[in-house]
Amino acid sequence: MNPEPAYRYLFGPVPSRRLGRSLGVDLNPLKVCTENCIFCQIGRTTELTAARREWVPTADVLAEFDRWQAAGGTADFITLSGSGEPTMHTGFGEVLAHVRAARQFKTALLSNGSLLWLPEVRQAAVLADVVKVTLSAWDEESFARIHRPAAGLTLARLLAGARALRAEYGGQLWVEVMLLAHINDAPEQVRAIAELARTLAPDAIHLNTVTRPAQAGVAVSRVGAAWLHTVAPWFQPVAEVPEFTGQIPAPEQMTDAEWVESLARHPLDLSALAAAAGVPVEAVEQRLRGLVAAGRVVIEEREGQRVARVATP
Ligand code: SF4
Image 1 (cartoon, rainbow, N blue to C red):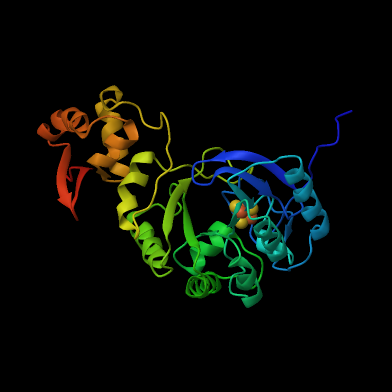
Image 2 (image 1 turned 180 degrees about the vertical axis):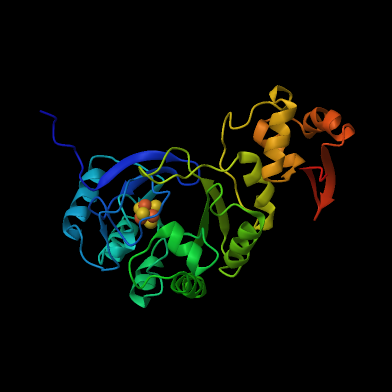
């Protein structure tokens, strides 16, 4: 028989590039969420609802946190995240306030942003040092297709809520943009998302993509690191790109056909390609020289970027 886990609502601390050592607090039973995103790494939402409730006993969560702290627990951030949308829990503000009172930890709220249009949710959210919301759609149709939200939740509400939070909140507002190949990664789609993100006046924007298969039966594939680097400057502030290792091979290892195929999907910024491959930009230029001379690839200036694309016949 497996021993009882030491904690039911706390997990970690886990190392996080942006939050340091982050202790997760999970306020949702698996898997209750306001959305059923096609890219969700946790699994299919089994209870899709916009209902706010005390999904797990707040007192038990607080007692667990106190026990963890009394046992000498250390972390840089206490982060509300986990099996679903944390703002669905009516006690999430109380949890944030309790952690703040300990005066030892910063707090982060990782939210999909779907309930921020509710004033009581924003009132609690402002207690976090960092609030991260997700924005991966550019219109209601793409929002419905990507996030498959509960009835009544729309992109318009998400944007209105996030803008209202920005106006009321002095902490760090981060926007995460999840890009998926063939779903929301076309240039005009990314530019439209960037334009919406700009209206939220965030302190930081994080581009992301899937790193492992999501739900069974839903085909989502990741976006190449070079494309993430190419579109990052389209955001304001310039988006941060996660570090992927070995995502693209060294430029000299790719065949001519592979180069043409990958540039046919998206024109790519030369310095983004270099960054993704971990080589100097000169190495990329040198590798492409033959294809340029053969008239198969063109390198041109576009809005301050040097971009390689396939030559149009
Ligand atoms: S909001 Fe988060 S937890 Fe909910 S379905 Fe989407 S990715 Fe999964």
